[in-house]
Image (tube, rainbow, N blue to C red; front, side, top):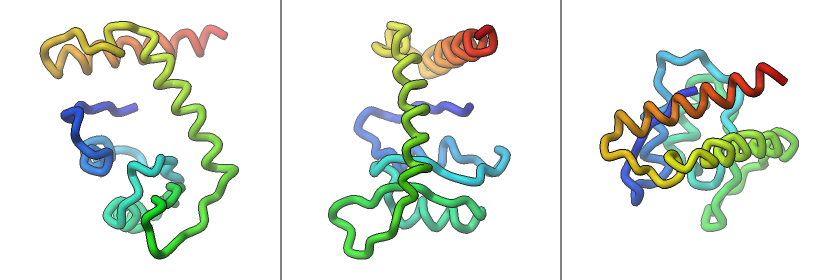
Length: 119
């Protein structure tokens, strides 16, 4: 898992480059919401032989089909974010520096992973 921090008013598309570094292992599918619907994101993923499963924004002229069975798996990601936000410190960002916020996100992620392993 890779995490990064952007200002609150930043679009999801601008944070895409931060988390999708070339040094990561290649995914086969990118599950994302409408916030990542841009030509740049789609072209980047297709150049890396990754299938983008991103619903189109309503303002798009050219429409593309979305595999709904794959997109339903995005629910697992949303539930993970919900469980991370159960840690009040993650949800409210009490920490002053980006390093401490990211560090606590890592700690909360490890805690969730360990709980998953024990079940």
